Amino acid sequence: MVTKLFFYDPDPTVTSKYHYGEIALSSLGHINRRARQTYADEVAAEPNLPRSVANALAGDPDSEVARLVLRLSPVLTDRDLAAIALNQSQDHLTAIAERARLSEKVTDILVERGDNGVLKTVGGNEGAQFSDNGFEHLLERGREEPEINRTVAVRSDLTQERAERVMRILAELGGEDAGGTNANSEAGAIAQQARQQRIEVTGLLTDLAEKTRLLDDVLLMLAEEDRAYHLAQVIAREAEIAVEHALRTLLRRDTNGIALACRALDVGYPAFAAILALRARRLMFANKRIEDDLRHYAQIDSAAAERGMRFTRMKAKLSGDGTSKTIELQTGGQRRS
Image 1 (cartoon, rainbow, N blue to C red):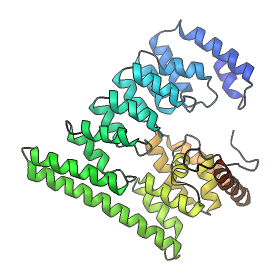
Image 2 (cartoon, rainbow, N blue to C red; image 1 turned 60 degrees about the vertical axis):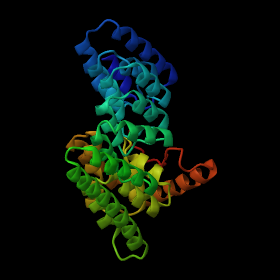
Image 3 (cartoon, helix red, strand yellow; image 1 turned 90 degrees about the horizontal axis):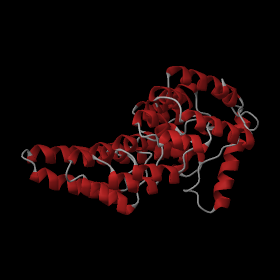
């Protein structure tokens, strides 16, 4: 009852968050594993969950208790995730690797400590950013398990330099396998697929600039093919925002940002529904969530969305670093509770 009352308020005060946190932390020490997991699953995605409670759940020795909080919680900071990644089990690391967005600071630790399962998960997560050292270490560890590098190779966000580096390693590994010819053929097929997709999205952007293709058709195609990064590229170009901003907005738990960006671009319902379906696959939303988000999309005023986008672009320019800050789109009074 206390939990329901607390989360009923969409904007709790600092004092109420503190008191709720004290109550929750005290209770967690007196309930069994099953009760802790039930509670954790209920509050995992809550943006108003006190950070102290989120950390207690995320750091629970039982990975089943921690899993959804580690995967979904918007409250946990990079520092929180890094501390947990340094000290907890491989199951904890896998849950972190599944987050919609991961910073270089966190992926460096996952690559250092993770087992092959963790490395394949984070390597294929297009919301995960890698430092140069982290990316190189990931590929070197993938020499022991080529499937890791095959997973990395089909990422749509690879620079040409990184893509070529992955392909060279896969080709080397192919020569060492018992079935070397087949392995080399597979590496070549992966490389061709990655190159073809990069060429294709460049062509799509050109077509949009020349107005020979409709934005809705492009977004629909990319969403149905589950190409989140390329989808973010197109939205970023059309909305005049950074690709990193667009990708973070696309994969945030709430839809306010991506809904406003799409409304400002006058994206139609079928294309936006496909984008929501992509998000549902990536973030494990239920179909009812898609229906609710579509209804919200219908209520957004286009003029308010355009004002929000102008504010976003201005904020990015003033920050002086358009790739490091998350988009914060203003809703002009139509923010969802």
